[in-house]
Amino acid sequence: SLSRKQRILLISGPNAGGKSVCLKTVGLLQYMLQCGFLIPASEISELGIFKNIFIDIGDAQSIENDLSTYSSHLTDMKFFMKNADPHTLILIDEFGSGTEPDAGGAIAEAALADILKKEAFGVITTHYINLKHFASSNEGIVNGAMLFDTQNFIPLFKLETGMHGSSFAFEIARKIGIPTEIIKEAEAKLSQTQVKMEKNFREITRDKRYWEQKRENIRKTNKHIEELSEEYEKKLIEIKDFRKKLIEEAKAEAKKILASANREIENTIRTIKESQAEKESTKAARIKLQEFNAQIDESRTAADDKIEHELRKIRERQTRMGNKQHKSISVAEQSASQDSRLQPGDKVKIEGQTAVGEVISVGNSNVAVAVGNIIMNIIHDRLVKISHGEYKNSFKNSKNSQLPVSSDLSVKRLNFKPFLDVRGQRTIDALEQVTCFIDEAIILEMNEIRILHGKGNGILKVEIRNYLKTLGNIIRFSDESEESGGAGITVVRLG
Image 1: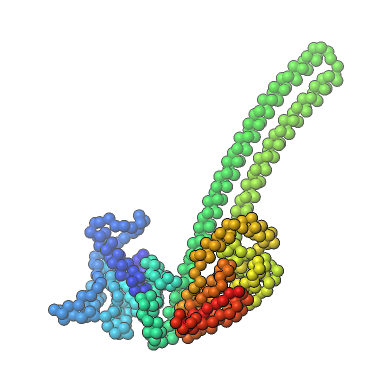
Image 2: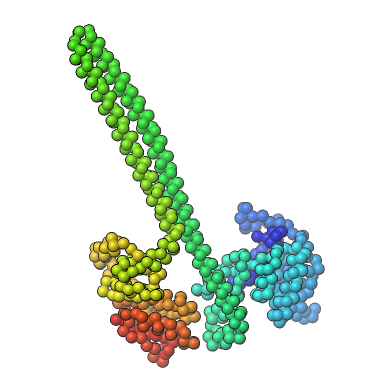
C-alpha cells in the first residue's frame, strides 16, 4: 500500500526470496491497468494512474555506448532524479549494486533522499544495510521484508511491511553446500556488531512469526466460540418462543376446561335447587369445583417448571462456554502457573503425549517424573499438572486398551530413527530436541541412540553431555568410532 504519507516501499530479504518478482509484479500490473487491461486484485483495491513509470531492472551494460554495469545504473539514476515528480512511479531492482559496497550504498542513499524529496512513488529492492536504516528513520518511506523460514532454510515468498529483511547469506550458503570451514572463516571476518545485529534480527523475526501463529490460533478459537454462542443464543430464543406458545396453548386449554366445568356445575346447582336438596350437597359440589381448578393450576405450574429447567440448563452451557473461552485465551499463563507450582507427589501429564506420571523431585530446570517403572528427567515446560482423578482414569484407559497401545508402540518403534541431527542450532533449542528424542527412545525401549552435534568449538557437545549426566536412564555415552564420525557424534546407551 503506497500513499501520500508512505510513497516508497524499500524491500529487502534473502536471495531467491521473491524481491525482484514482487517488484516486477507491481510494475506489470500497473502497466496493464494503464493500458486498459483487467488485473488480478481484490475488489476493494484502489490504484492510481501515473504520468511516468521509470524502471531500472537488470543489467544494461553496453560496450558500444561505453557503459559498464554500474555506469548504466548511474545513467538511469541521473535520469530519474532529473525527471521525477509526484506523478511518477519508480521501480529499481538491487539499488546501489555494481560497485564497491560502501560507495555504492552512500550514493544510493543520497539519490533515494532526492527522490523522496520530489515526492515520487516507488518500489525499490536492496541488500544495503544503510538504505534499510535510512527507511527506518525517514518519513515517506517504509521498509518491507520477504520472509524466510529459518528452521527449514526456505523462502516463504510473503511480503511483510514495517520491518527490514535479512539476506541470510550464510544460511543460504550452508544450504547450497559451501564447506563449513569456509563459512566459519567468512563469519569471523565480519564485525561482531554486525554479527550480533543479524542474529538478533533473525531471533526477532522468528519470535514474531511464533506469536503471529499463536494469535491466529486464538483468533480461530474465539471465532469458534462466537459461533457456538450464536447457536446457543438462537436455541434460547427458540425455547423462549416455544415457552410462550406453550403457555398460551395451556391457558386456552384451561379456559376451555373451566368453561366446560362451570357449565356442568351450574347445571348441577340448578338441578339441586330444583330438587330442593340440602345445602350440604351444594357445598360439596362447589368444593369439587375448587379441587378441579387447583388441579389445572398444578398442571400449568409443572409445565412452567419444566420450561424453566430447560432454560436454566442452556444458561449453564453458555456459562461453561464462556469459561472455555477464557481458558483458551489464557492457556499459556495457566500452563506457566501450573508448572511453577509442581511439587513432589503431584500428578502430571507430558505435553503432546498420553503418558502420565508422578513427580519425584523438582530441580531448577528439570523435573524427575516416574512414568510406570521408568524415571524420566523432563523440562518444566513439557509438564502439565493434572488431578488425581485424571491420573487414575489414564491408568484405567491404558488397561482397557492394552492391545491397541502396544500395537501403536510397535508401529512407532518401526518408524523411529535412532539418530538426531542438532548441528547449527542454538543450545536451548538443541537441548529441547534431545530431551524429546531421549523420552521417545525410552518409551519405545530403544537400547542405543546417536546424537549428531558436530565438532566445531565443542560448545554444543559439552552442553549436551552435561545434560546427559543428569539423566538416570542412561548407562553410558561416548564418541562414535573415528570412521563413523568420531567426536562429532555422541553414542548414548540406554538402560
